[in-house]
Image (cartoon, rainbow, N blue to C red):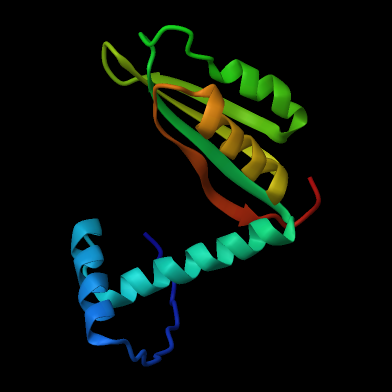
Length: 143
């Protein structure tokens, strides 16, 4: 397997002691090996939020885990039909007797994708274990 040479820079961060203790608890809870990994993820989350706010072209996934025995559960086909050409592909996996995993791969303007994820996470998917726009990445061309 080919290794990529990733250059890293160093910086220092000063924090109040109680804030640092809370951060260390969060790091332990999320299973980070060190503070640097946690800082990198926080920076990526902030950059992602800026990308969404700027409404740039992105690709992303809407990931759903749900109990298919829940009555009146709206399926992802409604999401896929309402999203139209933004949907590139979708997959459905049976995790066990009760739970299913759906991943919808989409491409479009960041605000449009975020609106779909917010709408479906908040209303359409009662009984959903997780729903959200994951791994939005800025696209190289307009969708």
